[in-house]
Amino acid sequence: MPPHAFLFDMDGLLIDSERVYAAVARDILVPQGHAADSVSAFFLTLVGVSGAESVQMLTTFLGDPAKAAAFNADWHAGVAQRLQQDVPLRPTVRDALATLGGQGARMAVVTSTNGDSARRYLEQVGLLPLFEVVLGGDEVSARKPDPAPYIEAAAALGLDPGLCAAFEDSDHGITAAARAGCRAVQVPDMRPPGVPLPDLGQGVAGDLSTAIKMVGGFAAEIRAE
Image 1 (tube, rainbow, N blue to C red):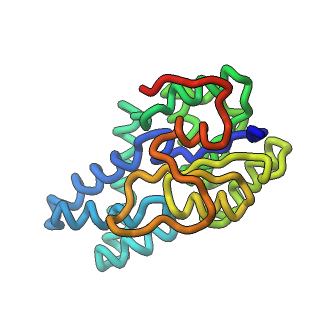
Image 2: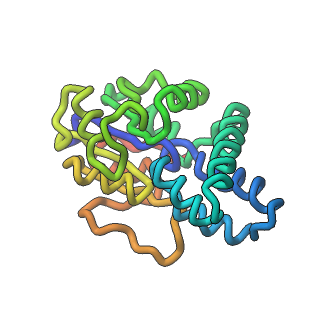
Image 3: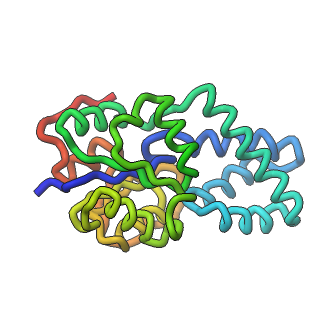
C-alpha cells in the first residue's frame, strides 16, 4: 500500500547544498594553510550532523574554539550568499516531486536547516507550494538523529509516522526516520569512504525517483532528468 504521506530531508536529498558547503569550507580554510584534501575529508564527517555537534567537531579540527566560531560564522554566511544566487537540485528531484504533487500526494520537508531558510530555498526553486509542512531544525523539540523531527512532522499532517515514507541521505537523518517508525529509504551521497551504511532495515536507492518507487509512491513511471 502506498504511504499516506512522503517526508523529505532537504540538504543533500532535495537540494545539492552539501557540495556548496564543502566548496565554501575549502575556499575559507585552504588560504589559511589547510590542505584541500584534508578539508574535504573532514567535511564528509559533518554531513547530517546538527549545528551544535558540528561546532564541537570544528573546534577539534581547528584546535581552537574562537577559530571554530569565526569559521562557522563565515562558512554559513558564504553558503547563504551562494545559495541566494543559485540553489542546485539533486538528480530526479523536480520531476519526482512534481509527479507526486500531480497525484495529490501529501508531502512535508523535515530538515535540520532553520525553517525560514529552508522555506526560502524551496521557494527559490519553485518547490515550496508542493509541501503542506516544512519543519526546520529550529522548529522541533530535538534534532536528528532523535526521531522527534519525523514524529512531529507526521503529527503536523495528522498522521502516525508508520503511515509515512521518509527519505534521507545522511546516516543521522535515516536513523531519525527509522526510529520514528517511518518507512525509511536512504539515498546516500556525500559520505566518508569505506564507512558502511547503518543497518536499520531501511531501503537504499541511488536517486530520489528510485527511492519513491521503492515505497510504491508513483502511479505511473516518470522520466529521469
